[in-house]
Every structure is written in structure tokens, then in C-alpha cells.
Image 1 (cartoon, rainbow, N blue to C red):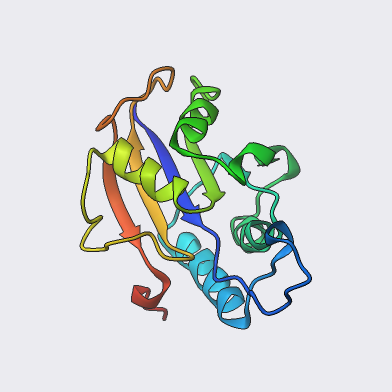
Image 2: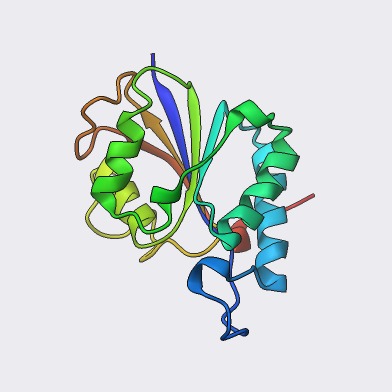
Length: 171
């Protein structure tokens, strides 16, 4: 049985208030719109998420709140993990390996460059991801994953889709 991993980079964040630490940076108005748009997109697909794991940084929290609300996730379906904030590829692989057999569909909301590295590693890609040279803010990538996540290897997943907010048509 295959499982699904949904990766989402936080929406566009503000650098306006220089007194805030990187961890405290909020979303911009454009970022808030993109987060809401992608949340609506996930409902339209439809995507079922059994567990959402997110960095607790303000910009990822604000992004995640839109997803949580749209998908009507319960408290026990949400995990805030500090290590996602400054993670590298190895950190994210170790995190995913913690979820050896469950859940069926896991959503991870985090930061670049780690998310892009994870996407390319799991999908076996070294260059562009569906014509994209990078993983822009509020982008969602869905991967079909092997049933067991104990030893995730390069190319062990298949990319289902990689969607940027500007390419989502609503209506």
C-alpha cells in the first residue's frame, strides 16, 4: 500500500520589521492570500491529511492555520516540531522515518532549502521539478511514497504534482 507525503513551503513572509527575529517573521498580505488560495486548492482536489507536521515559526504557523481550518483538522492531527525550522535534508529524512507505518497521508509545512532538497531527493530529481527551478513560497508538492519509511532512499517516491499558487485556477 502506498502512502502520500504532501510538502508545502510557507507562504511569502515579511522582512519589513527589522526588530523581529527570523523565527518571528509574519506573512505578507500576498502570503496570506496565497496560503488561503492553496488551502482552498487542497479542499478542491480533494486531499485528505491524516497528520500535519509544521515548523513552529510564525510564517509556517500562519500558513498551517489556513490548511488546518480548510481541511478541518483536529488537534490530534497536528504536530509542531522545532527541528523543522532549521532542518536540512538529513533532519527531514530522520523526522519522516519516525512515522514508520502511519499515517496514510502526512503533510509537512516547512522551509527552504530543506523542503526543495527533500522533494528532489525523494523524487530522484537533480534538476528542475516540473519545470520549476526552485520551490517557491506556498508551493505544494504531493508524492506517492512507499509503505515503509524506515529507510527512505533517493528516488523512493513518485511526484504526483507540484503546484504553485499562481497556477491555481479557482472557480
